[in-house]
Image (tube, rainbow, N blue to C red):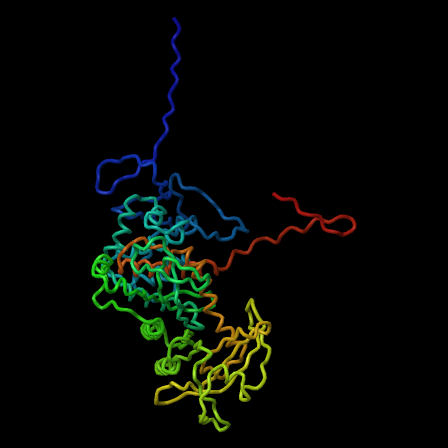
Length: 491
């Protein structure tokens, strides 16, 4: 009698995720696999501490050695790397790199989230910022939390954004300080962003006309203060503009949990408030303020910026009244519009200027000393009218009022192009890091989300500008006997 062979049935292991606070584990196939070498303590994923130099590797640890030509990779693997995912040490030290080493994201989180009093809030804030950088597609809370591999983080981050009590104003001030410490701002730009949304359920969502396409879209309208640095432009403060539909309807106010002092704000007034609250506290350096004052009294706006110690470059309308200066520096008796002053005898001839580093141009430029007619009484600073005309389309002429009278025209044109670059950043980089994606319905939730999305935007600029590791030189191109290069084969 022959024994019947017994074949062992293979058992496929299913991913098991521990539920915090429970004594059992249940399979969960829809959640991505957790990050390797992580342990779950409470409801936050922590990394095991890195071994000391010279110590033997832990059992099961992968032994990898970067090659000489390996360049740093920016993405989910780099943001949640073995030695990069540990929450930063919040020791309050002000030294550069304290507690964070070369981890740019961890150092930014340590600096920016330091105003939060509780350690669990700081850990949740770092998880949210790293999730915004690593997630692809829409930056919903579920998608952000999925980057950590811990199912409980979705509820944790939802509470942190929607129901927590932390204040976003100190975090934004810390972000402005950190950006200014890394690279002094070359300019502060007040920019009004139209953030498209699907539906009209979110807080502040209203039908607006998209200035780029001219179409009516459902969107939020928010005024942002951007710091223009050598690394790029980064938002550091925001004010959400609310329409009368949201302010006058008690049902909508209660659903969005609007504060009692919420009121309609003008874009220029909101920008001046942010300059006074955030830019003035970012450091002693007073960079020029760029602001669109075509629908505002530019003279009074300039006076408020001058009182705060900020130079300015204000976009004004062609019909704005100006007073040309006489030969002795005094005000002339006549009042003319900006268009007439730029084409009158006092302007002289236009000069051809190409802004340095700009993709467009050249332009015809003229400078005329003047003063704004609507300047309030008080000390007055010498002002300048800058007119920029397209040589191929003379009707496309833009006008600016500035007190930067010693800067050359090319430098002024380079500054004037900053709002257009920020408009592209909002559409591309801002969408990539969550400026458009907020699914909540509360006023405070939007402000907390946009604050952390601004921090993620700053972190992305730092990661994109960090120096790459130098690799070996490329191999020489194969040549034929006649000296001509042969086409390279694709790998």
